[in-house]
Each structure stands twice: as structure tokens, then as C-alpha cells.
Image 1 (cartoon, protein in one colour):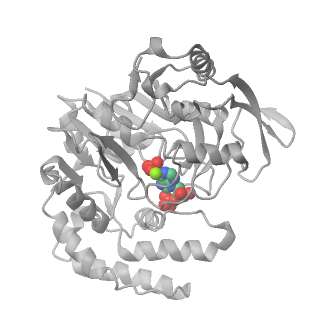
Image 2 (cartoon, rainbow, N blue to C red):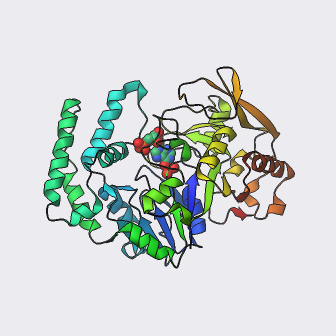
Image 3 (cartoon, rainbow, N blue to C red):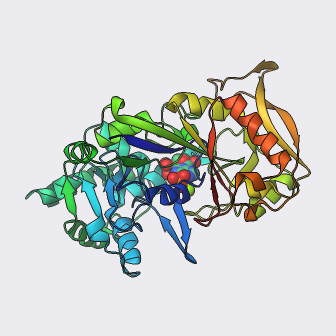
Length: 419
Ligand code: IMO
Ligand code: MG
């Protein structure tokens, strides 16, 4: 069977939570493969709302196994809070989640280092979610990290103390005022809580499951935040493209099936970094208001702009997207004219490629569409969609060379058209 992958193709916040929840009904297992509690995947159903951070979005589906893969960085404190919140609603989370022993642990001091690094960068800061993501992946790559499986070892406390002390020395060198002990008790308690879960050798577990079932891999963040291919250095610290699913779960590339690429009908970005189609005017404010574009994790207002097809085509290429999923088209219902960026002018030269230079001046070149001026949220069938809207998506499919298979017209599970 196949590993199908769901990915955000922009700068995160594309609506991955809703789509994984919708698709999860078809998959007996859902796996997160990278990122950590920097993610905020929102789910709305039966009048209830949840924001998932480290738990895969299949958690509310009966009988689905939810795998936290080895590419994930796990903060035991946030994870425990998240689980307890869901357990309150009667969901047996401990039966539905398995965790990779090779996933790295986020320590309280990783979060402090994240804050210290950002403070030291001043105006040039990344705009990190301050969840300790960068410092934890740094320790992983520099071979200093602690992994989930280490909590079972007799010398865990010693190894924790040794890593913590290293962090404390770094924080002192940076002259960052903080209390490195503040969250230690909560961390140790949460580590105890983690021991109640099935901790597995993810690569064996996932490959065994794949013999009889298809698995849905749930990406976090988006392609333009990828450590290699995003707008470096304004990126996250993991591989957010499709290849990251292979590394983050221990699955061979030949096992990849569908690659679902999710994008919003406009663009948003939180944190710093280039955003060619960003709007600084009333239209940008209107998009933010209609789309409720405020961070699910940090509450920060998101930067908004028109859809960027140059960046989207780049993301489609990087991950070999087979099926596109368009979110929040209904947010454009009241616009007279809708713009999409179809090329860039970089230092006066027109191009349809994303340039290397993050700091280059990029001027977007737009194609304009007549708005449909119809409330799309009531549409449930393709035939109910207005002609202007169908022209608009036809243009995009043509430009991107991939069919748009799902159109989402509202946050609820039901507001979805499958094509
Ligand atoms: P989901 O999964 C949007 C952004 C941060 C910052 C940069 C680095 O909900 O789409 P980090 O904390 O990872 O070191 O921050 O990446 N960022 C996200 N933006 N959605 C996310 O996740 C994000 N996770 C990280 O704002 O600019
Ligand atoms: Mg988010």
C-alpha cells in the first residue's frame, strides 16, 4: 500500500488540519513526519473546534492510528496539555497514538535558546514561534540531542542534566536573562506521562503497517518555509517538502502514492521574510479580516497578499504534487477583481522562477480575473459553482499542470467539494 502525503505549498496555515481530518476518514493511519508544536492545525466539526500542535489530525477518527514520526521534534509539556485537552472530550488518545523513539525531545532550555537567538538578531529576527524548534533540530544535527526513546534509559536524568547545562552556558554567554529551572518539574512530569504511550521503532512500525494499509502523512508548515528550498534564512528547521516524509518516517520514496498539495486562494505569511505579493493596503486588511488570518499558535496577525502562482508552481515541482486542494476560495466572494501573480520582475528582469536571493527586489506581475460576487459557502456540487469561478480555477490548473481535486469553501468538514 502507499504512503500518501498532504503538504502545505505556501508559508504554512493553508488549512492542512481540515483536509487531513476530511481525508482521514479514508486512511486507517495518519502520521506527522516533521516540525513540532510550531504547527497549529485547526479542525472544526459538529460545532467543536480544536487546534492540534503535535498530534496528527486523524485523532478524532475512530480506529485511526496516529503516528508521531522520528522527524518530529516533540515537546512533552505541550504534548501532555494537548492530549489532556482532547481526552476530556472522551477520545482515548493513549490508544490512538504511537510515538517514534527516534523523535527528538524539545527541552525547556531549547525554548529559552530560541528566544535568546531571536533577541540577539534584533531587527533581522526570523519571527520564530519560539517553541524551541530551531535549537532542537540544531542539537539533532550536531549530534547532541535527546530522543524520546532515551527517556526509558537508566541514565536519562544525567543526560538531560548534561544537555541542560550546555544550554545554560550558551544562555549565559548570550547574556540572556531567564530562569532555566522554571519548567523543569513540568517537563519531568510530562516525560512520565509520555511513558504511558506506545513508543515504537517508527521505521519498522510504518513499513509493517504499509503492508496492509495506506497511511496519510501530514506535513506541517509549508514548502516556502522548507530548510533547503524556502526563503532561507526565513524558514523553519525541517524538510517540509514531500521528501521529508520519507526521511521523517523511514519510508522509501518508491512507497509514495498521492501527493496532495494544499494552497489558499490567496497568500499569508507569519514572521519575517520575503513575500512578493504582500498587500499593505485596505485589500490586505480585508483579506485578513474575512479570512480570520491570525495565528492559531501565537495569535499574531498574518501578513496577507494575492495568490503567488510562481511560488506555487515551484512548490508543486519540489514535491511532485499529484492532486491540488484549494482552500478558502469563499474568502474572495466579495472582491470585484481578483489578482494572481503569474511572473516576477527581479531587478527589472521578468522570470517565472523563484530567485536565489532572498533580499532581491521582486515585483509581482499580475493576471486579473473578474470576481464572481456570489456566496460560495453554500455550494456543495461542482455544477453550483459560478462560471467566473470555474474560469479562475481552470486558469490555475493550466498554469500549474495539476488538477484541483478538492475545493474547500468553509472551515467545516461538510463545506468541501470533491472533484
Ligand atoms: P502550520 O503547520 C505558519 C513560521 C514562523 C517563522 C518561521 C520559523 O500551522 O502551517 P519556527 O518556530 O519554525 O522556528 O519559525 O516559520 N512558522 C509557521 N508559519 N504556519 C506554521 O505551521 C508555522 N510554523 C512555523 O512564523 O516565520
Ligand atoms: Mg499555523
